[in-house]
Each structure stands twice: as structure tokens, then as C-alpha cells.
Image (cartoon, rainbow, N blue to C red; front, side, top):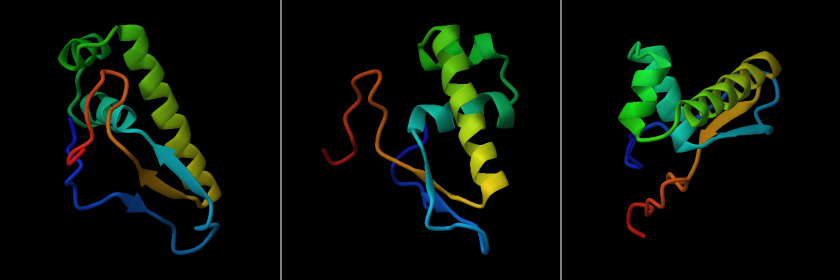
Length: 93
């Protein structure tokens, strides 16, 4: 999973409404990374993450919807927190 030490946590527009923020959870980013960037099939991604395919689909759908909203409406995208679904601890917590 994407670590909390990543260099890029916020992405924003040069114009538009940078004061409006879309929050992406780590599990949503990881779903995007595996399926859209790494080319995993949804079943493969779900297995790699140790979640059901339905949960993976929900995370992927929410992430895509949030990214589209930010791009279309000129909002800032912020990656927040740590994975909470599987009882993971936040780094340093």
C-alpha cells in the first residue's frame, strides 16, 4: 500500500476553486494504482489487497468519482490519513 511518507499528498489547480478540497482515502488511491496504473484486473487487485471484489469496486468507483469531480470543477485533491478499514495503524501512531 502507498506509504504515508509519500512526497505528494495534495494536488491542486492553478485556477478554479483551489479552496474546495476532495479527500481521497489511502484505500481508494491504492485501488486506482493497482487497477488503472498497474493494470491489475479487479479480481487480482482485490486478492492483492485482501478485500472482496465488491469492496475493491466500491473503493475504485469512489476514487474515480472524486478525481473526476476535482478535475471538472477545479478542486484540490488531498490524500488523507491511513487505511482504517483493515485496522491498520497510522505511521508514527
